[in-house]
Length: 338
Image (cartoon, rainbow, N blue to C red; front, side, top):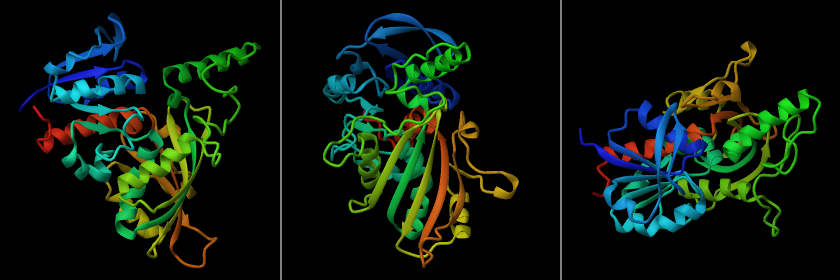
C-alpha cells in the first residue's frame, strides 16, 4: 500500500484527536509531523511528541496537511499548501462557503471531493452530526424544511471550554465563585442560548447560520428552508440536536428507521419503552451518530413531517474523525495530488 507524508497544523483538542484517529484507523502514514506556532515538546495522544514551528515552506515535503488550528493559520498557509501540491483538509470556517472548495462529510457527499483544487473544508460540528442522519432521509424522500435546536457541549469551545466546565464544577462544590472566561456566562447548572456572534440583521448567531448555509451547500439544495437555535449546555464533549423535518414525499417513522438502519455512520437507538434513545453520554467517544425519538409530526395533517433526536461526538464525528475519513476517501479515489 502506498504511504503518505502527513502534516498536522494545530495541537489543541481537535488536533490531538486527529493524531489518535490516524493511529486508531491505521491511516497509511509514511510520516506524521506536527506543527504549531512555536517549537516545543507536548504530550499528545498519550505520547510526548516533538512539535515543530509552522512555516510556509513545510508543505513541499507533505502529501496531506490536516489543519486543526484557528482560521488565521488556515488563511495564512492556504496558498503555500496549494502551490506545494499538498492537499489541505481544513477544520476551520475559513473556506467553507467558497464556491471552489468542497465542504464534505464522506457519508453525505464524498463525490464532491472529485473537484477539489487543493483545499477541502470540514463542516461545522453541528452540521456534520445533523447531516449524517438527515442526508439518507433526504436522498430517499427529499427534505423541504428543517427546524433544529442544538444542545452543544463545552468541547465546541475547545480544550479551554472543557477545562472551564470542569473547573466550575469543582469551584461550586467548594463553595467558590465559578470562573467565567471561555463562555459568556457560567455554564455549570445553566444553558446559554448564544454561540458565536449575533448577526444584527436577523439576530441569528453565526453558529445558527452555519447550519443553514453549510447544509444547503453539502446537500446541493440552495433553497432548502432551515432555521436553528443553538444552545451551549453543560456537557463535556458530545452535541445533541432536536430536528423537525418536512419532506416533499410522505414518510413514516418505520420507513425512517429502516433507512437509517442501512446508513453508514448512523446507529438507530429508538426504543423509548426501554428507555433507549440518543444521549450525549452514550455518543461520547463513538464514531456513529445516534438517532432516535423518531416519530410523526402530529402538528401536521399529512405524513410528510418527522421529529428526531440525534447525538454525536463533537470532537470525532464533528471534527477529527471526519477529517481523517476525508483523507481516507482521497486515498481511495486516488485524489492526493502528488
